[in-house]
Amino acid sequence: MGATREVEFLKTSLLLVAYAARFWASRLVRGAEILRTLPIFGESTHWSSAIQPGQYAAFLRDRDTSVPLTADGQFADHNSVTIFDSLSEARAWGEEICARLSRVRCDIYDSEGLANEAVETIYNAAVRGNYVGPKPARRRLYGGLAAICVGIVLIAWDVHRDLLFMWGYILGVKMVLIGGAVAIQGALMLRDLR
Image (tube, one colour):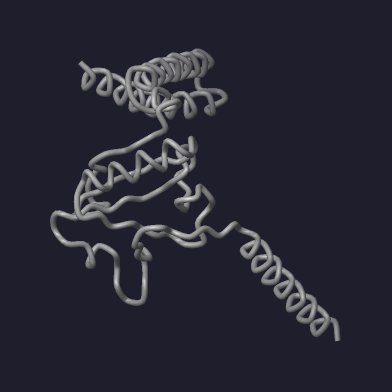
């Protein structure tokens, strides 16, 4: 008798979760793409097989979270890509949308798709300096160096205590490794700007 009640309870719980998921998914704001778009994973056809050499794909994303957005700046129901015949068309479209909506980032890729770096990334002019240029490069460099310093202090503290707490050593090594990678990224970004 008790097992039957538990099964019924689980079924009811799953139905409530499914209903809540459908309810919140339907509350997402829907926007219409103006230009021709292809779903990223359509019916057995991937967008990269539909793009021709010389064409460019533009993805609209939130500049901080990389969540897909529509041309209206609303969260997209599904991932989509807009295909252009030339880089200048894609750039003009991306600049127009980013000028209207400051939270949108437009990543433009060539016909090889997401396998390579974006050919161009477009931001709103008011916030571009926070993502491209010397300011974010210095922020990475100094943040990485600060993480390295804190990691070294944690390692030294734990070694001085004969590795009694071990967490200081483990956390310190991770901070040194991650801080080193971030500092190197920042240094390379600064070098590329010269």
